[in-house]
Length: 383
Image (cartoon, rainbow, N blue to C red; front, side):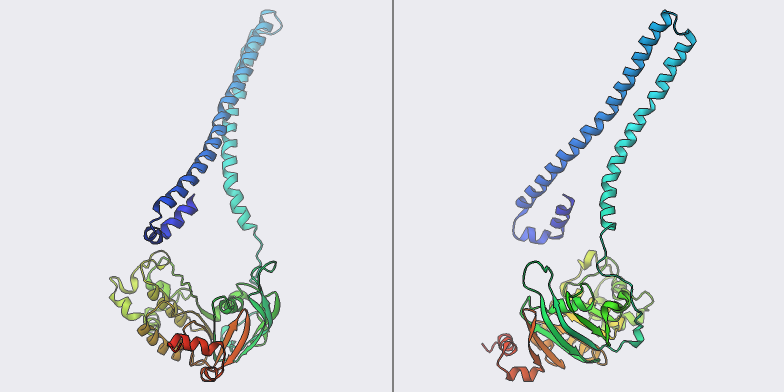
């Protein structure tokens, strides 16, 4: 019930826009009814524990009182012993009431502890340990060798099929193609969010599966398509992962990402709180902060996954100018649907159903009859 309510609150604008308040209210009402029925059953059982124990105490006390009294009248038991027996019976049985309450609390606690333990017992698929990867020694040469990957190997078409490519250090390459072609999957494998089921990925000649996971990721600046911002200030979000960064470096990164101007217009400037997941900012503003965060990190490898999809054309042009300076001297991987953002890449790979169908520079691809030329004509309005 809590999960559904939280989901509705996060998507309240969509709920309002489609006028589905009553539909969602019925879902909450149904979940609430189920919860109330389960809770009532639990309360009924827990409420019965204490009365049952007290009835047992009363039965034991009554038997002691009557049977002991009968024995005392017959002279089989002394009066003093009888009095002590009646008193001790009550003293021994009454703590059982407290024991029943503890048992009830124990069962309630175990229900919560079980959920926590199930999470802690979840096996870690990708281990953090591995060979050291000093950041200053990373050149950025990347090689995919016959890589195959599927999100669900049992069913469905693989996301990547026998993919092989070589990315020289310091070069800028781009991946384009239709949605679902496997572009974002490549970056996820490079960051080891997943491990390939086939083949290997090499960084400077070393299999990334053998490298220290955190050091590998520190060498990669990643700007995701779905931008995540922490519930903190703008400055703290730009310096995320760089706690020692000074305000001058933060401002310089913001300027490089074309974010400084809109930040200065905010009431609190760089101290402005962005809210949960950056809800107080627009999509384009969130993307510019994510870019600034990657610029401040200054990694040897830069990965941009649709990093300018939520900005207007003017801002995109400004960011592109900054990126042209940023990619110099570092290995850059750019994923984009807007071909104008990747036309200056050293090599453009066109992906289709997890396979590379074209690979060359922008001008050469335009002269070839293929998917890239068709995409370019669609985006430029030539067809």
